[in-house]
Length: 162
Image (cartoon, rainbow, N blue to C red; front, top):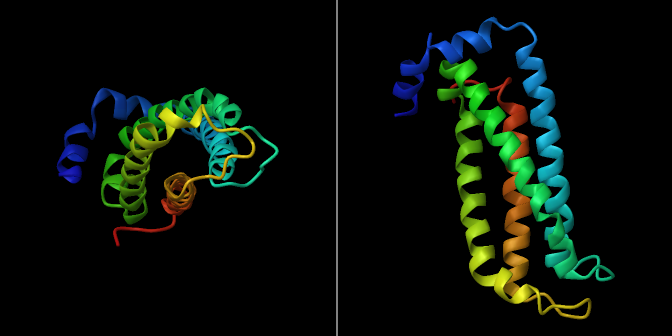
């Protein structure tokens, strides 16, 4: 399915623009890295506090970083789509990319679990509140999945079709 979509966008106008604009790919890489820094930088603080670490920080206060995390995700979504459009046949069959997308999907499910179970009660927590098991699970699952996304993203240039 992904391969047939990739075939449909090869030689399209967006694909051609990305491939023929000399400076575009490195600029996208820089922007993607900046988005990743916002995304992971915020999540590390939020997730570690939600898991019960950094007890001096108010858990609800750490969630003021969420807008930066979402901006970082949005930046990476846009640049990631442009990467795919720029070289669709390479990405469609790349095992690193495929695993990365599965991990992003699981990170999204984990985020839904956070919004359904933790976010409604988190504003009542203070620095002395012990993190409930569901919060620890969501926090560590987030850290693991996003670390996997990062690692698989770095592997894309070095692994092939699996």
